[in-house]
Amino acid sequence: MSIEHNECNIDIGNCYLDDQRGRCVLVVYFPILKGREGEMKAISNVDEALIPHIVPVFEVPPGNVRGPVQDAYAFIQRAQEAIPPNMTIAVDARHLSEPHEGIRRPLRDIASDLHGWGIPVLPVAHLDDTPDRLTDVGFAAALHGGQAIVRLGNDSADPDDKEAEAKLSYVLKGAGLRTENCALILDVFEIRSERDVTRVEPIVRKCISWAQQYPWQSIIVAAGAMPETISHLPTNIATPIRRWDLELWRRVQELAVDYGDYGIAHPGMAHGRWAPMPSLRYTDSDVWWTYRWAKDGNGNAPMYDLCKALTAADHWPPEGRGYSWGDGEIALRAIGNAGPGNATSWRAWGTSHHLAYVSAQTRGGRD
Image 1 (tube, rainbow, N blue to C red):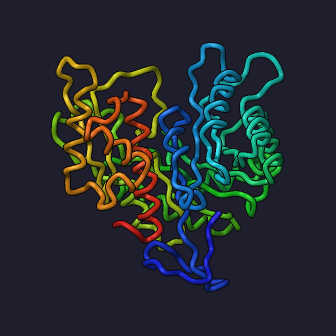
Image 2 (image 1 turned 120 degrees about the horizontal axis):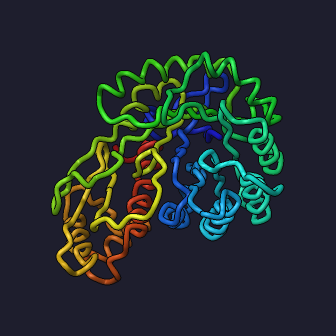
């Protein structure tokens, strides 16, 4: 899952050398995204040149009152319409409950249907998966070439090398997998401060040291730094939020690890619908510039003024609307040339820019 090149024309800080073969291995970006409409829209518009460098890890969202099988079906429909040709995706169904009846299984349905559409899938396994869930991972992996992802850590616990060592054989045996056919995600979930980064860095380094005893295809360090809500931030001004997830990766990247984050979202799986004021989360080198424009009685019309402010800011890229699909959509609103959109649209625009920006960062472009 890493990308190898005989020649490397980028800053060595954004690649690492394979000591055994002396080749430069570029960092692959593993964004952990909610499998909802906004994120899917952003993925559907990823520049073709970036597709080999991005492996989205989609968390299948729950929410259908008819149960997990219907949740899986809704995800399948969105994925079929959105995933670009030649893009490999990972699918994590951990948020879906177990079906109470019938023989259909969510992850199996997703893997089977997307296989029929020619969309490569890497199923995601966890240390605490039940035997049935591991069997589902194995089924999905076998259908898609025998590869998968093992994900350590969650919202209540950091990755733990001792726990991983004790349970790894259970996971691999239950899913019929081998480490050389799997990538490993070390997910520390939410980090929001220098103190958080300082706390988790030794944990991550210890886990990487353990993981490097095995022939994983890739080791990914993942975290999220966006707060759960931005409603406390001031309006009609751009407010920076530090990208502590990127800072963590920078501190350990010399250990030959790939990069993962939660895009422009909080790591938690939000439930229910929301109708925020016009807002954008716009990725820059070390921060997200967070824009919130107060409503003035004209619905989402303030989004036009918000986009004007953004396109006039220093962090608007020199490429302008050509930087990403999302930047093109923002530029259209800056000149009042399209509708103001809604929360789903704003998430899509911001995610699109984020994917392009982070891909450039990890490949030696912007910094």
